[in-house]
Structure formats: structure tokens, C-alpha cells
Length: 299
Image (cartoon, rainbow, N blue to C red; front, top):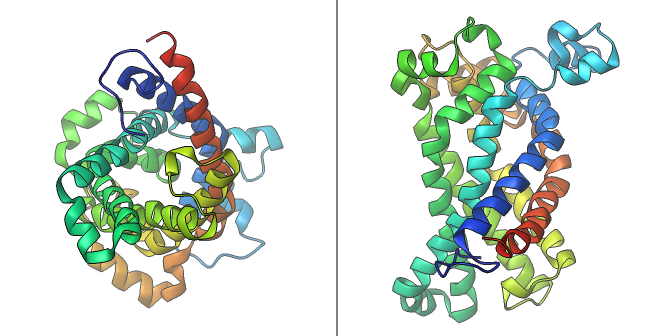
């Protein structure tokens, strides 16, 4: 899965960027509404019941027609596009790149510590964790996307460039919590996927896994990742969805959440994310795997 630097071919760097980027666009259009629902549930501080779900999810459009309700789930699509496409390109190329570095330089250490089979899986998981930590560079786009989804009043009619000029480093608010979430989350994603392929499906060469094998491994990895990262993801989301001028420490968010909503509030929005995570990952992964060799014929 690592990008090739040898020009044309299905593994060329350009083909990988185009293929993974296109898969990110398609994934965004299909799954952005579900992400909006999850973010609004995580940001809601009142008690959630069946009678209040409509107003929590659709907000000002709670009494609108079905069509307008659906369109209201696409706030911040421009920011989401920039974030999702960049994220997919980074994830599809980043984790294998980190894995290649670990294999070249630290394979003996991993093998001697965990054994050959487990060492290979640990390198996959560790490479995923490193990729997740580095993903913090995309945080401003993620922050703007979340604000548009759950707190559009924070923009007050300002455009993207003006926001970047005026807010500066505040767009990186919650970076520590983001890294704390991504490190174990990405470790679990790639680690659980590798364990599933190795022990459950009997796949030793991960690059030769079939579509069905990738489907099963992706579900296992993604469910493990989202569940482990859910508490920190909720804290990160609440830090990011506040108005720009409000600086709310993460520990304050944690204390208020436990005091006012109870420990189970850390897992708000988890169910819709888990319900969609299998199809979402299979969709983006399969599409990327199809588009990369297609673009490889021309670039």
C-alpha cells in the first residue's frame, strides 16, 4: 500500500492521491449526514429521548419538510470536503509509509520482542498510531467542519480566509486531545484489522486479501478504533464546537460532563458511528482500490 516513486503504474504516488482523494469525495457525499447526526448528539448536553431526537438532530429545521431536513444535515460541506479528502489521502498513503519505515529500520526489534507473526501485526498497529498522531496537522479543517455542523453562529458571516487570519492558532484548540484520541484509535484500527486477517481469516500477505476479507477486517478494526477513541472524541468535539473566543480546557469539559451528564455521556453518538462504520470503510477502501489502478493507467 505504500506509494511508489517509479512513475506510472497502479502504485504510483499520483495515482494513489487521485484514487484516494476521489474515494474521499464519494464517501463525504454519502456519509456526511450521518457524521453530522453523530456530532450533534455528542455536543448535546441535555437528556436524549425519543421525543427530543428530532429537535436535537434537525435543530431549526425540526418542523420542516423531509427534503429540507435532509439538506440541513450538510452544513460545513466545504470544510468537510477539504478535511475528508486530505484525511483519506493521508491515511491511505501515510500508514503504509510509516510501516515501511518501521520494517526497514526496526523489524528486528519488533521480531525479537513479539515474534515474527505478532511483530508484523505490531508494526502495522504502531504505524497506524504514528499516522493518527500526525493527523493533527489537519485539525483546523476538522474544527471548522465541526463548528459548521453544530455551532454555525460562531462564524458570524466570516469567510474561510478571514477566519484563518483572525483566529490563527485557536483553530488548533484541542490538539492534545486529538492526538490522545488518534494514537490509540489508529493503533486499534490497523492492529485489530491485522489481527483479524492473521488469526481469523488466515491471511499472511495483507496486500493479497480479497474484498470480503478486507470487509470483515475493516469492520473489526473500525469498531475497535471508534469504541476505544469515543470518550476522547467526545471531549475533543466539545472543545472544538465552542465559539472561537471561548477557550474551554479539556479537563473542565471532562469534569462538567461527568458531573452533569454522567460517565455514559462519553459515549454519546457512538451507536450511529458504529452502525455506519462498516459500510463507510468498505465503501471508501474498495473505491480507492478500484480507482488507484484506473488512474495508474494515465499518470
